[in-house]
Length: 150
Image 1: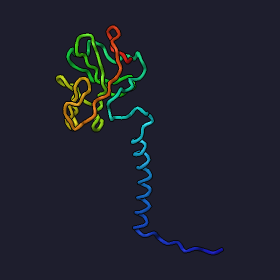
Image 2: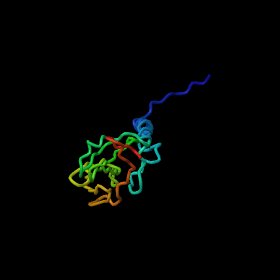
Image 3: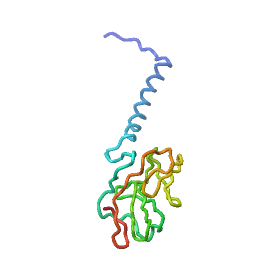
């Protein structure tokens, strides 16, 4: 039987192999995190966003200030803004900024993005950029003391 001579790998070869292994270990979770098996995860806004199962209680009507908004989770788990412009009448829009996907906050008469300063009206319209696309409407209705997905 013939014996082969074993050689010690040089530093460059070891570093290349370690780099490839690291990319493999880090790359897969990174790619998985970038993906979504939810086809409605579009943050481009506009249109109507899905609110999840109809009839799901989203908030108590009393928790939404008249003339203001409450940011909460929709039936699908995504952030929405429930707006009670007049007593007993509630509308909703996605609370995900169409610029880069940050959750907006309810402010005095508007929805503000804390990341880059975009401002939206309670109807979802862009009042101030950098966002250029409105927030998508979300179907909700008042059911007694509750606001539910429609």
